[in-house]
Image (cartoon, rainbow, N blue to C red; front, side, top):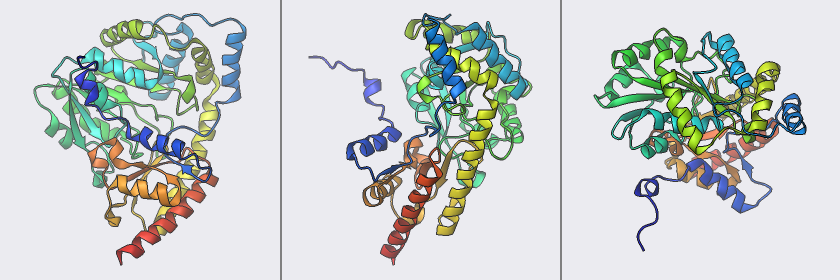
Length: 392
């Protein structure tokens, strides 16, 4: 028989995040603490759930427009206007998707021809590189540096650009580092982007989870709205991971082609989720603020815990991840994570799951209760002392 599968997909590695999640599941040990998955431990707020339930009770279970409910697209535009000062046309420049992940996939498919280069700053979310490869595009990785607070600099961007470069993925606030790009950082790279006629895919799924200052979208800068696909969703800010709902906003010419792919592959995002999302955008600001305050509390706890252990750690200002450096222990990130799980029954994700530049780091999610984090840090401290003793 001939080979039944495509070479391109065989060459793509499985997600490093899911690998450790699956190991924990297979262990079936109640003592294991998993800090590996970026999923809020909060339940979706009741008023949002109620709206989803009410929509079902009213029989609102049919297809919506391919681009999503008109009311939802209008609320998305209202939200972006009040949070970023950007005006989008709900009828032409907004597409509701099945999570932000679908928007990343179909956005790259709509923009890239085979051979086009897509710049991907890493460490970053695991799906960017595979999605680029599946379009026939060529991923070009920029290794972000800890000394730059894992921010993308204009110099790094300029050095990565070739005549074939078409798209820059901008993954901030960043998963896994928690790094952010402030307005001055965005202004510095904007000039390089415009000068080289690039398009930007700005993944802003953690936009509401920043702790230093309010998030600024690159699409809000002069000259950038017309060359940016802004991607966001409801999973992180509103604790709606299982509702699978996201959206893309951008130039009509790109959104139109993304919608065409969406029509054939998806039809429309889940109807129940869309009605719930309208309620989230209208009345969910208080919920978001309460969750952000709790994440910040956990963030400060982890920073203090690692500092007390003498473990070098970059201070995250966004998302809900912390990225401690484990280079002093002389192991790869994967070796460290495997031993930590086996010996201390705590699961974290090796930094290399997010790119080769993540080597020497570990991603720990603080989308978990303070009680779990305290116990995990107690075990981490024991493990660190054990490793230091072994080195003597």
